[in-house]
Image (cartoon, rainbow, N blue to C red):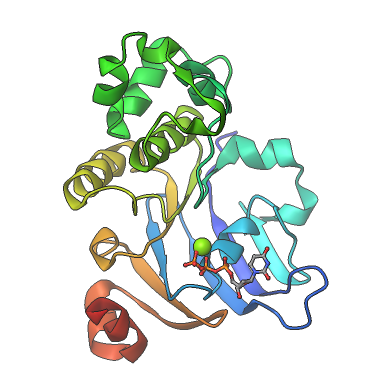
Length: 242
Ligand code: DUT
Ligand code: MG
């Protein structure tokens, strides 16, 4: 059956193991296929923590995170990663070739699929410019690629798995504004039927989102489109002006 990729957080409260107070309180939202939901908020607001609950890097103690109506706590890692790709805030590369790094989540991807993912992620030209292209080696820790190249390779890695749900954690911050814009335009086509949840620092990255959640101190304090929030949300206005 076709997996649709509906994400729902229902009254989710979460504290890190051993911590006294929660970093997320009473989080509720739904993200549907075809939608882009953006999460914005100051550093430490809980954006990364929020994303981490869907792929079960942590489990919420209260409330539920549902994937296509099923609590993720009832799904195993393989079932979740088949549908959900997380591009982490600190993208990591393995020592090995670019090809190994791109095939990590889907070992049977064709070369054509790898190049298509690189094209969308704006990584095609720098990989082509390397003398060994896909067979070029990434050194330990990925120190022989720049921060922006690393981000683009990790975005391409997520694209290769063709997930139903994309989680981008501040994935565009190391890119210059022009590359960011090109990448998001290409992503828009490729992810048109998918569910996209995107954490951003730059407001320009998310102005077109269907809904923006403004996170402050672990709570969703405001939600709406860019235009709506400009009128209704002092917290959002502060972020825009900062
Ligand atoms: N926190 C922990 N343990 C962790 C990770 C984070 O206690 O393993 C705390 C730090 C912070 C809160 O949780 O007070 C929220 O952190 P998170 O990383 O979710 O915040 P963010 O919104 O993603 O911040 P940034 O914009 O800096 O990425
Ligand atoms: Mg974060």
